Image (tube, rainbow, N blue to C red; front, side, top):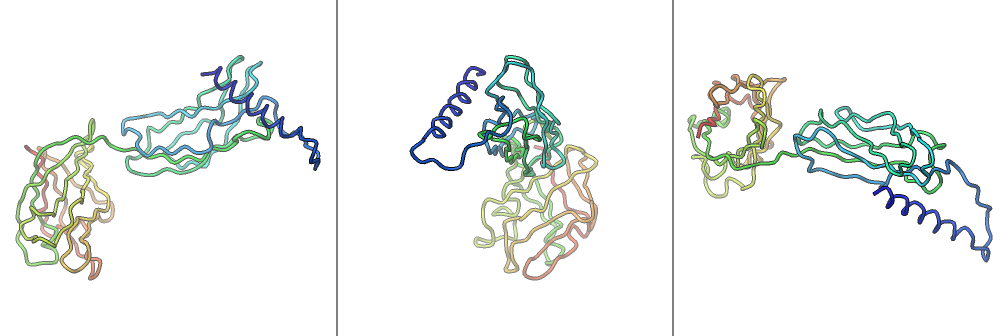
Length: 278
């Protein structure tokens, strides 16, 4: 790999040198700026939105054209909190490539992280270098079929005169995590729905990694009774609990939103339950 990097950088320099030697169209004299070592990122953009949820590090390659001596290059970063970026990257003598290792252990799954990493000093790169790499990263769970789970409703009850019915839906589990995804939770199996009330494809992701603090993000439930698509979120930092594989939440800890009407305190009687026992 290091030989390949050497070839790429030498080729780039040769091609640009050939252009600068065109004497038929003489213009402003070229003034060389920066280091002759030719440190550069190998690409200007990195976008990876399918990083495994369990991954703790990610490597970005930095290359250089001249490798006679050891070299340390300082870096600057605008990546947000959650990604650890070293303040420098080092090459050993004879090395044309070095690994810049990002610490992604604190990245939240499903959240997009965007920013840039730059070579901090113009003294470390030349005119042809890619001195900044724009980065977009996101972790994703690997989902596996879990089976059918049971939901007991206490959300729709907040705004409509319906009973706290129980029904079954298909669920998936994130590999290696206590995170569950309910598929079409209020779809065709919800007893009060009729064809036309729901749209298939809704997913309710529930994070039960901490059984004493179960959470979920704002979720659109995929059904609409004429007031916009019903959606829910946890209020004021509230969390649920998982006991014996049954998830419950405190009364009035969930917002039940009818976009075209208003928002209600969901789970008014604390009867909402997701039973994960198969």
